[in-house]
Image (tube, rainbow, N blue to C red):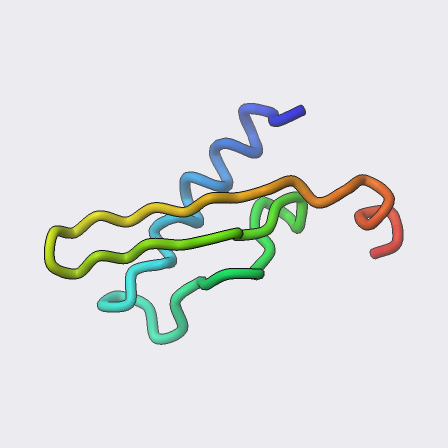
Length: 66
């Protein structure tokens, strides 16, 4: 279940996809929200300013192995 804290962390991380402001912008496969989620796809459209990302939860069994 996605918590308010997870939503907050994800919403903060979305700004790190900006290639104009970040030397190493976040991209597909990177973990966010304390490793609970992974980026599936990011969009950083420099012509219109849209920034977005799709995330998926990491399975609990994988989290316990960390």
